[in-house]
Length: 76
Image (cartoon, rainbow, N blue to C red; front, side, top):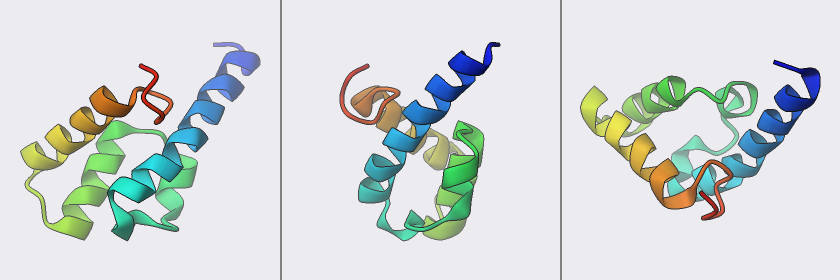
């Protein structure tokens, strides 16, 4: 993967962070959100912060990205 593509993907993730924080307020200022755009890690954070089961956390993350798109702004 090219550096330009990686930077583009990183930019998309950073744009999603604000929408994630609005959706799950307890995730505000969590360094893991700023350093890794992994859906699995996000699901783990939801499990820890909200007490969701793994299946529920995975469903929440998938649902979020299905509604918001990869950029977090509704553009799928």
